[in-house]
Image 1 (cartoon, rainbow, N blue to C red):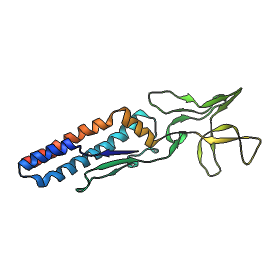
Image 2 (image 1 turned 90 degrees about the horizontal axis):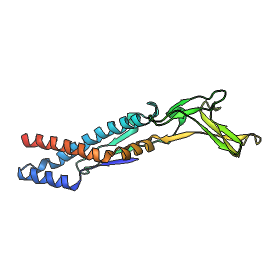
Image 3 (image 1 turned 135 degrees about the vertical axis):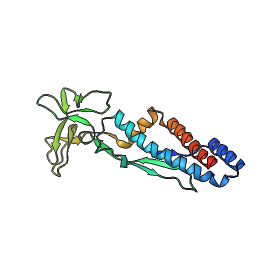
Image 4 (image 1 turned 30 degrees about the horizontal axis):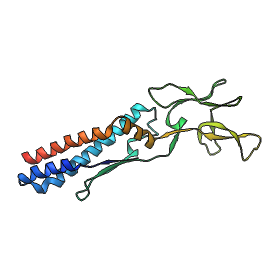
Length: 202
């Protein structure tokens, strides 16, 4: 996911007009650059914080450093926030419980949700999720795949790791649901006025 933070034309025109009238047109790009950069920094903090608030995603699975900020330059007054990441294993990335004697492994992805047993029903069979450790030491929650046989043992059904949302997709949903585009624009105006007033008063 990539979030773009840039000054919209009306804001550029307004600041250009005001600073030009005061003979300070040389400071226009500097003011815009600072406002965009500070908005991107605040946006980085916010998208990380609100994603952690909405989902049970663990700190080790989604760090602030996973939100990569590309700062604006004087020749390119645009900042970007990029969040990369593959789908995360449920056990590694989200709140979960191991399987018991009667119940399969459970997980809770949304903080507003509840812990749910991970299982699927196919015909008269119930496939419950379970915690297992692979030969390479990878420990996760897995589930049998109905109708698909293991390559090493054709008498047993294959298993697959259960994954949930990637941190990128989780952040994208938060960005859209929480209206962060509008919030970032409001943040930008606040920063813009702050730096413009500093130039005017300087």
